[in-house]
Length: 358
Image (tube, rainbow, N blue to C red; front, top):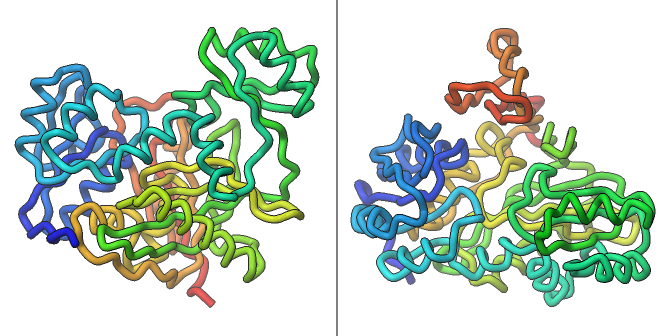
């Protein structure tokens, strides 16, 4: 059993984007401080953190100095260099642990991990060469999606193949990076489960949310999702199986396709998740506080949903809608403090509370 961190202790957060920002806010509500490590200057999380270290992940000295000022380390994104983790792990506990990062950083490793647990995924095959891709297409068929094994998010690092004739162009888009071919899964809709596991092994899951994407980026999450009671139970049990297999501590996002044959795991994210933002206004304890509680060794909170919510991301020029949204009843704005608006950039989100939970 991990001794809970006392108030006044410091949570080190790798990454200073909007997820780090909302983690820092949650930590402050519990009387905990946060220290952000971020290579970029003036990160969104810096506005609400106790301290910020601005340095590259390759700077071992800066990493060591950062670790000396915190009590535990967590992260807001998964693509942290192994060399940085080597330095930090020798000095402070990292939660969630490195096994979750190792698996989630490589799509092939992740698929093999999930199927090894007996969970259903899209058919897949590793692709390093044109011959690999040809064999994979023979095995899986088209349409299919070719994805880089590492560093892909929000639709980046992906190419769609409608037929074998698209193979050359798709492979060129990978720019020589190791890749993975995934077969298409016929599904009615996508849902995600935000689940947490404490240092004591306790598991708690938020209600599944139903996701809609636009241009490869999450647009809305609606809670409750369209799921039968048995599907809802299956989704939660699948998330719990993943958490326990990883001996996980913290919050994890699990994306699932709803199909006639059952639930298919799309991917996992070892961190707080965009599709869990609805919890900020739909639950007494949101995903960010739940994560801080877990990594700080506190007991997990009650994540029961008290309201139906639709979360909408504000992307790029959507930020211009803020004055109108601010006048809406039952609409809670969460803006990320980003100075520059760019196409495809997440600038904030709004949670629209629809009704009390049934």
